[in-house]
Length: 153
Image 1: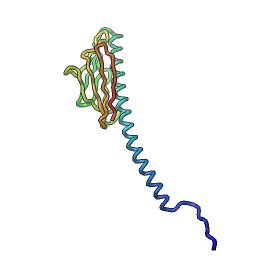
Image 2 (image 1 turned 45 degrees about the vertical axis):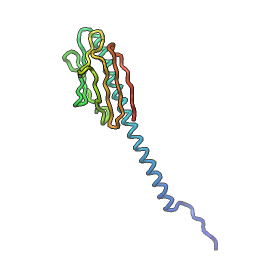
Image 3 (image 1 turned 135 degrees about the vertical axis):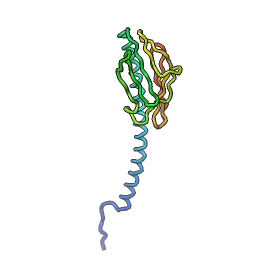
Image 4 (image 1 turned 180 degrees about the horizontal axis):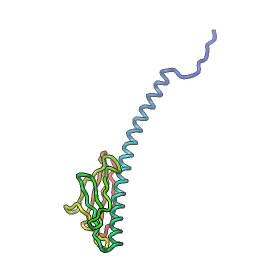
C-alpha cells in the first residue's frame, strides 16, 4: 500500500502557534502601556516648561503687568494669569490619564510670579508623576531658566 501525503497543519500545531502569539501579544501590550504613560509624562513636563517660558516672554515684552502661574494641586490644574485676566487654564489629566502634581517646592507658595523684566519668584521646582510612579522634576532659577530631569520606572 502507498501512503498518501498530507499537506497542512494539525490542530495541535495550530493551537501551539496561537498560544505563543497570545503570550507575545500580552507582553507587548504591557510594554506599550508603560511606554504611553511615560510619553504622556514627558509631554506634560515639556508643556509646563513651555508655559513657564511663554509667561516669561510675555512679562519681558509687556514690561507693565505682572504675570503669574497659579497651581492647584487638588485639581491637578494650573492657571496662567496676565494681571487679573486669565490667559489659560490647563489640566494635567488632559495630557494623559494619571498625571498629577507630586511636589510643588516654591517656598510654601503655589504661585510663580514673573516680574516686569522676566525674573521669576520664588524659584524652586515642581515635580509631576504618572500612575506608574515615573517622575519629572522641573527646576527653575530666578532668571526663569528651566531644567527637566526624568526618573522613569
